[in-house]
Image (cartoon, rainbow, N blue to C red; front, side, top):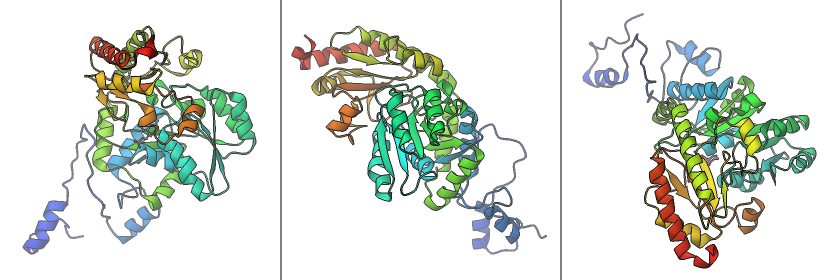
Length: 406
Ligand SMILES: Cc1ncc(COP(=O)(O)O)c(C=O)c1O
């Protein structure tokens, strides 16, 4: 075959296009995963293209179907989660949608934990419901209630390892066993824990979803997600995504991979600092309750000890009143006031007015989210600086609502 790269006999325009777009071959293996910023991949011949698109030959053809950087992100997350296979998506919500939509159809029921991320609740209760999928929300710590809901027939049991925002730690092995006994498929959102603290697949979960935007990426610079599970289940997710197209961009996949390399080091430090902050908050005037899995006072402390390698970087506490929470947030100078989590910077948020704004008052009460709740994603700053800053915030809260603290 003639050398396809010898363009010297072609005109300027042809050479400009092909000289600039055909990469040279690199024999050595790069030490970082390259960003394959390419929509398409060319095949040797027409038959090969047909074979790749027809799944008869491994390879790449079109980045909505598969892209090497995205595939590497999916494989890396699957490896850390202890899963056979994975698929990378453009956000955590895209991953949740992909996982659940690969399982349910009109007439199916989802049993979902009542304290889930606000958009997850909306996706199930207000979007999937329009397609004939019903969701019932249950308290994951009430095994009888979960069992009763599953007994009415459910295709999916959906859980969060550590729930957003009230840091509930359900007994995953028991819940998974219960779901399987009732013939339900178990999908677990492992975002708050990350695979460093807990690997639900190893506990029997069928699919695990992650918002890679959080601890996996770790630096507040990328929005991405992934689903992992068995080869068969991921094939269903992949098939669905060919037609939905909620894929991750190659540069985003690169950033997630780059963040993942230090996940273990960061999570140890996030956990250590979070425990120090939780212990401090627990004895402060005006703090009604602290929710942190590493504290003996946590309602599921024993379950958390069994399931989690460490307490993690997420904690929440109740200031008893919306105005107190607001004054606390305004009194801070180190943490970032924003809606996300899982970053090198500490992030503080008032869930009822932000991440869980989709919940109406009744839903907030049902989910056990107090109006004065503050959620903290503990970063990598020095613990003593953070403690001093929390002290300033608490003083501001006490000044704003003096009666409340007396
Ligand atoms: C527990 C949990 N799951 C999923 C998501 C959605 O992730 P993303 O923002 O990447 O879509 C979030 C977002 O905050 C979350 O907290």
